[in-house]
Image 1 (cartoon, rainbow, N blue to C red):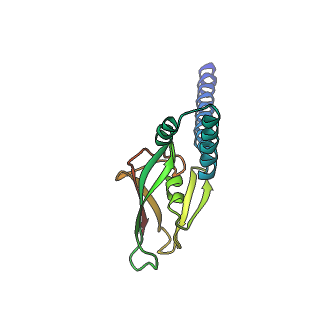
Image 2 (tube, rainbow, N blue to C red; image 1 turned 45 degrees about the horizontal axis):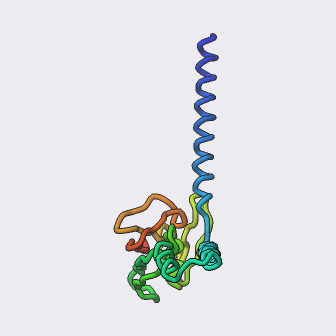
Length: 167
């Protein structure tokens, strides 16, 4: 009887530990939620502080290059769509995300918050579900599928992001 109670206690402890770990992962995913406007404000504040501290123009230029990344963003529209596929080079803040780059294109982007981060629901008028129940937007970075939210996935200078409408 003592052994059954001990096994039950171990199972309960393992379940609580697994639940705590899942909660920790969920909270960690939420911590990266920032917008391009927040990042731009932070850059402006950093530039103002450097200027007040007497940084040289040459130092400012070097700091600006290190604080930005140039990335290429492309969108592939489904066949017969009213909108055309496009390819644009944008500049995002250092540590900018896939979502920041998509918004920087100036395209019409609709997104919702989900348990896993931002979920893009429409690009340039092409909405998830418009080509069948399972259709929607997916993205790759440097031709590799990414298993994290677009607002969490960080980009580096020279990266390529491709958004494709999956039917």
